[in-house]
Length: 166
Image (cartoon, rainbow, N blue to C red; front, side):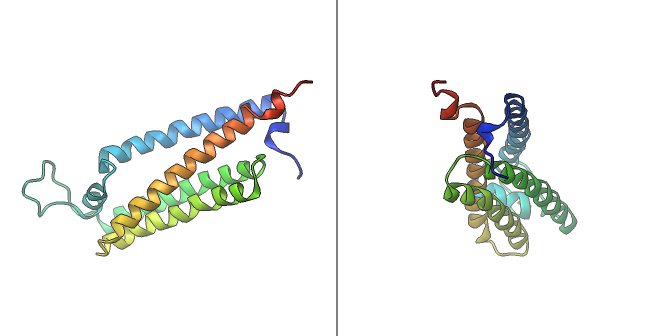
């Protein structure tokens, strides 16, 4: 298959654009939920997984996540986000960007996905230093997704070939 996104028909480019926007809406609504549960802080991640019942000053009481709840969280997120990143990687493969950019953005989110959710498991097992790795890998995963979406939208809607004189 030797084609690029910008060479697709206008209707297919617009369909992919709407798909990316709908996918972004769903993804960022989940990110909003993450903000409410962790406040995007290392302590919030730790509290969400390990609880805070020891802290008598806590405003809201959280209990340690059960093993079953943690397994469900990891399972559902790794499967669904893995599929999401696979779809985006396949679309990214047909973009007009360099092989290095494409390769990095096709692989990195999946590596960060495993590190982030594997890190949650290790945090739950008592490796408290994992909260920092979880935070870093999670940030990298989100930034990669944002970069992929923006680059794909640029390639679908604003490729330089659309503005060339005919």
